[in-house]
Amino acid sequence: MAYSLSEFEKQFKKIKDWLAAEFGVLRSGRVNPAILKDIVVESYGAKTNLENLASIGVKDARTLVIQPWDKANLEAIEKAIRSSNTGLEPIVDKEVIRTVLPELTGERREALLKIVGEKLEDARVSLRQARDNVWKEIQEQERKGEMREDEKFHKKDKLQKKMDVFNQELEKLAGQKRQEIQF
Image (cartoon, rainbow, N blue to C red):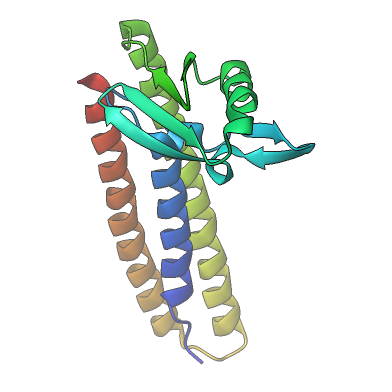
């Protein structure tokens, strides 16, 4: 039974989705509601994600508008945003909360670019681990006699070509995020 690379492709898809989600949370020049996705609010004696208590919208390039479905949660949401490490300052305006993102400083841009590099490297490490697992399985199949030696090396070449393409896609994602941060 020859090994199929479809499992490796599934792993790559997961890694790519994870990286895109991580980049989505990083604040660049334009506001993104994903910056609030990890905020937990104490509501009715239970801890709940903010996105389950309110709608989050973008008013303009630097302003988010949070509208709670139950106005009783307004104060709890404000407190949760204020105590989060997002750097956002919530402003309560009757039935909604507005948060205006401060301008990015050169120092903050450098820190964000460093984080992009770290996240990209984490994704590459995960991808290499997935590749190594596939390679071990291919070698094991060859040892068991399920695959010829030349077929093993053919699979290795295909695996490396996929790896190169996947690394380029990850780099492209990182390049796009770097562009956003720098401008």
